Length: 167
Image 1 (cartoon, rainbow, N blue to C red):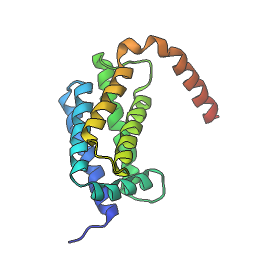
Image 2: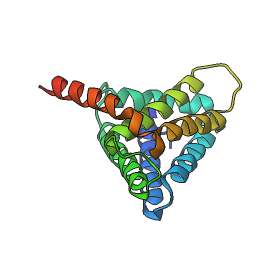
Image 3: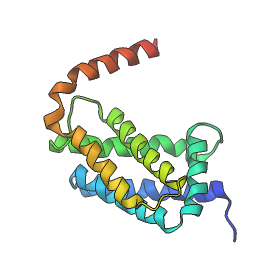
Image 4: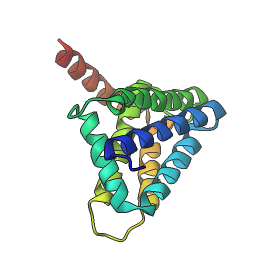
């Protein structure tokens, strides 16, 4: 039986959604969870670059609203689950709390999607797993609680801009 790219993309999204749910249920450190999930994702993608190029193209199309279906609907679920992992880290005191968990999750998803898409569409030989680890380290360093105080002004500007955009 042959599956279409949208069906395979749907399967990939469902797999990642299950992994997020499993990791959330462990109540492990959010930092370790993020590293573990990104490493696992990177290994799967590195195993078949050409295949995952098509899968991610389909996922991105659905997330941009260019196609309809379950993949588009699960984008919110994946964002919510990622936000739950971030909120767990905030409660554990390992992630800063001056930004709402959904906003921090949006930043994390944006970072890893960019790293993956850049890798998928490049001819360089660098390891995606290593690049995702570096991106996670960079993200987590900026998300650490000790970095919270200097960022309050930036958060205030973001909130004002968000409120203006919503009006």
